[in-house]
Image 1 (cartoon, helix red, strand yellow):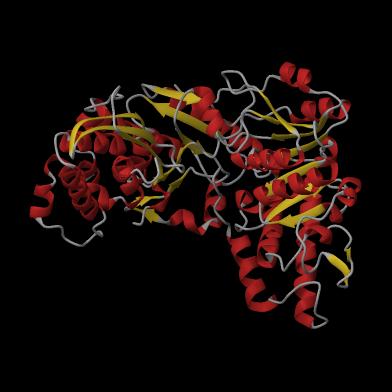
Image 2 (cartoon, chains in turn brown, cyan):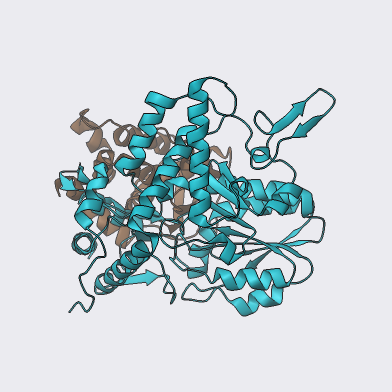
Length: 157
Length: 413
């Protein structure tokens, strides 16, 4: 059960049960859909930018504990940060969860992620990595505004 | 507490020994394979038939005059004959080899559609169809200007036949419904549906993907016009499937794909097409797959399809009973007539999380929408967890599933 305990840590279960910022923003500047057509997980992310600062963020939708807690922790982590900081955090997060099983991740890397580091255990479960990154891809799509609807099917594991 | 007798109509041990994969350990635990609606495992008889083909018979069919080509052609056509007998078709030429159920349905949608559908005509499907029996019809209806209609279902996952009757009219050209729902387990009253459709002058395709390995299929008794299924859901390799069609209809239908084997003569001015079934079999087919399917049919016949139905039904009752005792578990799909498919949701735990935790116990189930998104929408859920039965499953495995679900509940509360 050790890998399972690593995956389903208390912090993740708690965010799953009571997700933060689980709301639609009435006033927003950016938004996008995150959808995994293979499993049906579906979230919508709304952002309010003031200049370069993310002053408010919300998400709604449904999915597994991993996708929901990741979305929740993401919103908590980037609320108040700049777009550049949010993108940098996404890169760091992505690097950690895509680190191959067996390869070591430095403590420093995990620490930089703050509570999001709790999701590092997902790399032991390759089929679940895209659950952890779904909301992040939606965030990225909202910020870059290339395409409002994104899909995890372009994810490279 | 268990009221169901613990008898099985044949030796479980022998059956399990026929499937080498069942002795695997997954994450250190014995494999409990309950994902048979997705694909079934393969018995030695099928693995050997494929192996012998590639080692001793490999050649292209219907072409060469050399020995190996004759042997390969003979074995491939023998498999076609076995399938014909298995579903009681009138003639082997009504048995078309395809890549699977999806390919079979696309063939009919395209060829029947291009031949018979015109603007204003109607095609009827049901609310519990797999995406592969929805999308091809949407595509051809859009192309031909035809209208797609959907038979609704009740909260137990049973089709509303009274609504179906109201939909039928002289505009109805084709009805395409699933025999057994892959996400709900419902066994639809297809004989009644076929009779009603015929009365209105419509043709009927039955999606038999979830039926062939579990209940006796008799296409002449059903009187369906088309019947589609995949080999891999009946112990055969992937990439092989069957379309059964009545001769007179197939004769009238335009070919689907052009290429080798489906022609009689080709000049740059005009091509004439081959006879059935080859008219619909362009290109070198999956020969080993066809031979494997023939071996799978033999395998099912040695056990007996009626014995399989009976055994799986008793296992369905057992599985349903033990799962219902899991607190917070709700079964989706509670039709009176059901096959060995148990879809469920669990309070506080998403199906994907259930699937991951069970996997660590060596238990393979399917989680998600099962390519039936409209069914999920109908029941107001994003996904289900699904345990689906085959002949090699047993009660002990359902007990293990229940213990696995208790672990899910320990984590998710």
